[in-house]
Length: 141
Image: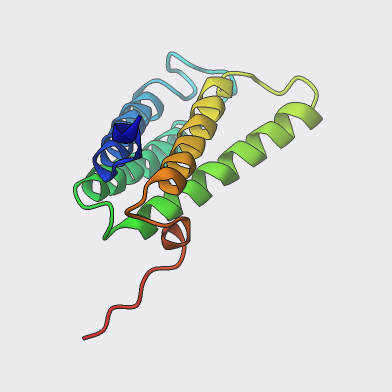
């Protein structure tokens, strides 16, 4: 159990979530959109590629942050906030809007799981603090 509380395990999870976002970027860029494999909800290909580009940026941010997570905890904090916005907005529309498409329900659940993992691992790791995800330490020069 001690291994799960290590910064190395945290890094592995961060890297894995970056790979998840990389696949998501390809998924949105090439499969989602009008005239493509996934057409529900009807989405203009421009917006699908735009979402894919955001996911590519998250993948890049997370994979690079995984190599030195202590230094780049704020990057992970940004991804937490972004994933939470997506989850909250998705579930709001999912619960409130009639006939809201369920196509992206698995991604909302996965984003919620990644976020919970980030938070649980940060809180359980003795080497980093939860506060560091959102408020960086001031560096003295």
